[in-house]
Length: 334
Image (cartoon, rainbow, N blue to C red):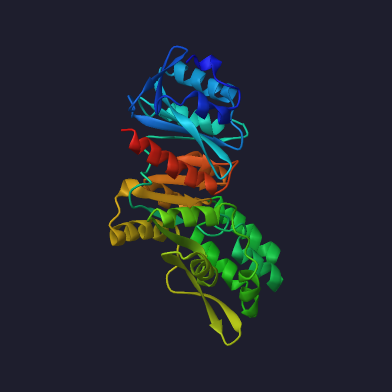
């Protein structure tokens, strides 16, 4: 099958590429194979619509870097088209090139993908990752100090401020706010699109799902109850009667604690490091993303997009589930 003869719409490829589970690229020709001939790295394209022309741009870049590739026929998950290329090596230049592209799809280039058919662990940040808001900013808005707090939050997430100190300073501004504000925020937390799909899919596959948040237990606990999460790690706000004291109880869940939580849960559940996935958006998530087998930045700050293995900009959390299913398909072809 000549690559140039494939339909424009990737969604139509499955019927055309039905004779084999893998196709090796040789010049402009795709040759059927039963197993992956190259396994040095993987490139996953994901989008609501994928085209042959988009893949042609990627293929040209692979050719310029002298990277051999094989194609796994595409699949669709939650209305997202997914295309997997197995490569003969991981290439850091290719990863940077993919992150720099401005296109209506997401691309991930990694040395290895977790195998979704085996036990694994997902640890995610909460604010602006599992949910679409920063809870402390919402508390502050209701307490009348929204502008002061949100400015500090933005600086902390961009890595411009030390997280623990910035959190203490923000919480101090909440002194004497009624704790009923917490209930109001908890009742109106907008979930990140794809969160329920990801959690349900992971749990069905026997994976553990947890949250490590620089936010607060009041909100992480609600998510744990609603979604059946296996563990939460978050901060505790001190109260005095019906009011907040402006203090945080105990240790603060900062970047170091998030990374430690991943390793502790990995040990607790007996999961290999290659089977761990971390998801976050802020600078305080970077250590957690870096110790995970697969670190995913979701709608992240520039510093996080640059350093994370995978940066999701167009899709939402369903993209992580797509990557996990891609890993299962790859593992089955070895």
